[in-house]
Image (cartoon, rainbow, N blue to C red; front, side, top):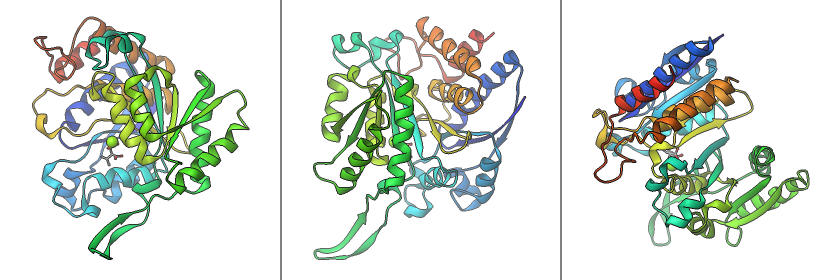
Length: 357
Ligand code: IPM
Ligand code: MG
C-alpha cells in the first residue's frame, strides 16, 4: 500500500510541527506495512514570498491528486499588511473550497492526564468532557458577498451570512451520522432569535431530525453555547454549527482541554480525500525555536489514518502513544504547569516515536 500525501508546511511553526507528524507517519507505516510518498507544496505566506500568490495552482493540483493533505498553519504578521485577496489565510479558504471540504470535524476532549491544565473549576474538570464540533466550512460569512461602499455615514464595509438549504442539509447529515456512532445526541448551534440564515438552519436541522429518530436534536443559541461551554462542557457530545460560529466556539473548546496545541482537525467532503491540520495557528512568536507542541499535528495525522486512509489500527496506535507520553508527565511549554520542565518540539516528537517502537 502506497499513500500519496500532499504536505503543506506553511508558515511560522508549520515546518516544525509538520515534520514531527511526518516522522510519526513514517514510523507507523513501517510498523503496519504501508508506505507514504510525501509531496511538499507551498501555500500561505511562503507561497506569497516565492510565487506572489497565497495558493499557487500547482498546490491545488497536487492536493487534488493526493490521497490526503496534511497542513501545518499559515499566516504571520509579515503578511498582515496585504489586501484581503492576497493574505495567507486566503490559501486555506481556497483549498477548502477547491477540494469541496465542507465538513470540518474538531474533537475537543479533556484527556484525564491533562486535567491539571484545564482552566475550569476542579469539579468541572473532574467530570471531564469529550465533544466533537462539526463546523460547516465552505459557506456562510466566509464566502458570502462582501465589499466596501459609500453608506449613509460615509465609507462602510459588509460581509454577508448566506446559507442554502443544500449546504445546511449536507453538514446536517454529517453531524447526524456522526451522532449515531456516538451518544446519539446532537446539539445544533445558531442565532435563530436574530438571524434569518439561522432560522433556515434550524428548519433544515429539524426536517433532518425526522429521518434520524434515534438521535435527539437540541437547539442552542450561540451566545448561550459560549457560556455553557465553560460552565458545563460535559453536556456536549456532537455539535453542529456554521462556519463563523464554529470558528469561534472551537477555539473556546480547545482552550478548556488545556491547550490549543493539542487539538487536531479533519476537513472532509464527498470523497475520501481530506485535509488534516491542527486547529491552532502559525504562532510566529515561537517559530523556529523548537518550542511548539507537535501533538495537534500528530493527532491530525492519526485522524487522516482513520478517516481517509482506512487504517484505524494505525490511528489508534498513534493516539495511544500520545496518551502514554502525556501520562508519563511529559509536557511541552504550552501544557507544562508553572515550574514544570518543558520539552522542546523535537524532544516531544522523539518521546512519541519511542512509544511507537
Ligand atoms: C481556523 C482558522 C482559519 C479560519 C483562518 C486562519 C482562516 O482560524 O481554521 O479556525 O478562520 O477558518
Ligand atoms: Mg479559527
